[in-house]
Length: 261
Image (cartoon, rainbow, N blue to C red; front, side, top):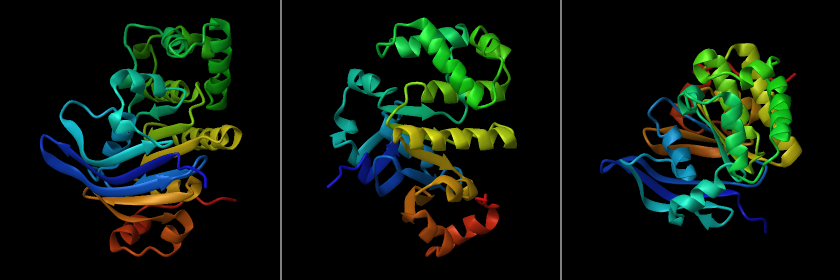
């Protein structure tokens, strides 16, 4: 029997002693795309930050387990987590610009990311970055690599963050509202690129969004969060076509769907 890529068992997460996420159970297999949907404050981003070991000082998983390929992430020390982030687990942040260093060029930051995981050939890193930039409609790669974050627009910084998350071809990619700061045409390109990453490399993807239309288009499974609780979970088509919870029906009615042609 194949081992799950990611599994959350009875997870409870608290901030300053107050439970923000309660009793969440989720499982995804290698190569699957899981969409986590819900309104702002429902606990979506908190879940994936916990899985990456990125909760800030006030946040703690005080109950349950989070397994990545059978290894309990909660038990790992900081060094083990740093080694895992990148080639094993990547993250596209909602605001990638805030995650970039303001006093280092984009090229230096990309190379530093790759160097930490054994990639020493700067020319090869540049070529790989340029290929990814072109796939999401950033054709002026030379200028971008030589720029500082403040010299680029918010949308360009967002796409830079997407490239940084994808460049090591992680086995599991977390995407926290990855297209919310992008134009509609670029949103479609980014979604297409994430799907291609799954198809080419078998990358599992967890996409967090309030837009159930995006999830309907790309996800194999969907988890619906409301006020820190998992209220509905299952195959995307089952949940979208026959939702069991009133809250899920409200989400579906509120957001236009993206339809495959």
